[in-house]
Length: 266
Image 1 (cartoon, rainbow, N blue to C red):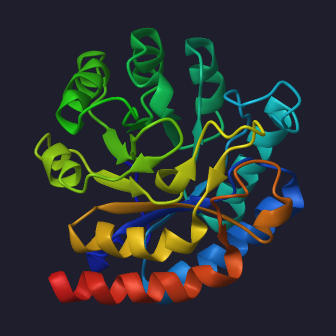
Image 2: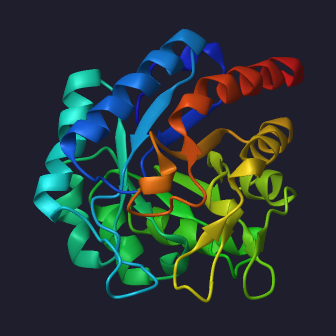
């Protein structure tokens, strides 16, 4: 498993950053700000940024600035700030390429049963974060994790990101966090994606960012090992998932509250 700064504190860890790498300057600004906050609060931190968005509602939706260009930005974040980085991959042939630039490969929820993708990711030797499909029970994630382990890689993390509730909503069943922890892997709560409202008539996914604090507090209270939050300086102009991202200015206050909850339940 990757080494995280501030790990001896016994705190939860944080995966956070923009939904997609929109450019080098924005990524570096966000990383610098989050590194400063997490160091002050002694929260182990992993910078998150998708180098490409393959799963978009419409053909004209923004997908990225170019694979290699975005991956180089992720590498620069790691080299500049000394924090691990995570990005998602979508096909088996992306695994080896992305692994040259980042520390953690993430398997999107919609793809969590894709055997060739999981095996290819496993063979890179990187830590693999598998997001639970919106259509799967928590206990069914054992089989996704097993595919990675049986391919020779025990460095697995699992992420709860909500369960489909009707056509245009998601809900979090918090029982799933301790259920998945019984597998022996760290379990993360993806707060912002759990608040998505998919399948909107406009073809643009909606969200409920006003509930980010509520969902995050509950996740820490039930014992999540890590928290996943997408954040942006100005979500209103973000090129992907702006409707459910946390405004960067609000992150420090939220994390301060979450640290207090973590301390209370130790």
